[in-house]
Length: 342
Image (cartoon, rainbow, N blue to C red; front, side):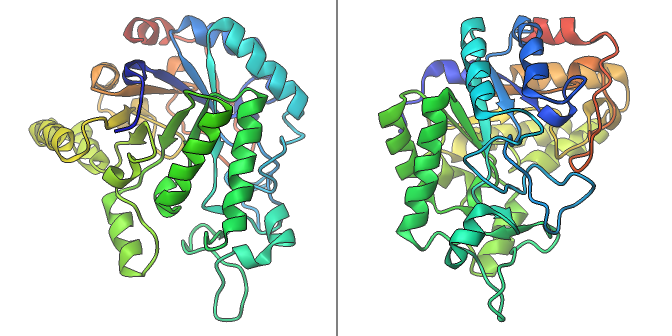
């Protein structure tokens, strides 16, 4: 079992997207908002990818943050590495931990890595770097066959840990070799102990489809050999049904019991009612009362709890990833409620 602190079970994580946070969408805007976030009872601030975004084959006017051009740099629209370092120091002084998104399953079409190491990428029959998920047309997939790629990626994680990062949320972690994550955890711990590892594990159907195509796809149980926390996408569709139809709630409760018995004893899930890939709870639930009830349920469900920026404002719109789409804070009407839950 991993040596995961029991306190991880009670973490409150706050997800934000720098581009859409604050007047200018910069690290300075986020820094100014950290005291308010901390007052809510948040323990960890998770930054969606902060790196430069690819231009080639981008989606929208500005591109998706998950199409990363350079893992070792900060998007100049947000600020600089030095400013991010200072932000980490300020967050720590407030009692907050800082988590960044790690997008290691793919890069932008014009990334530093494809330019310097084209041999590290998945290729089609004509030798062109491609994605294994056709709808993700703005990215190309990495293949972890070369030990030199492992060395590069782990060195990158160590650099961010030394800069002040306390945790990594690993995008689509299920499609990167488990051995890589296990080694990364060990080597990062040598630089900085007690780093938090959150896996974006995937829907069961996604695992099955990739395995049928001979591609890497780790189940949640496998991922917990390396990760402290994972998403609960394994039972997410059952929850979605329960939100829409109260008669399905017993089935969801049964799935929670099932979930608690099939994974290693140290397994912890991250619970939420919304995130950047899914509808806002205020748009999904049948009423405001139902939205608040489900928010409370997931806050007290076993595991960590995620608040997505804008949730404290009763936002009904999931922000666009590809263009500027500012959150309308409207006086933070739910901040007091979320603070009580935290």
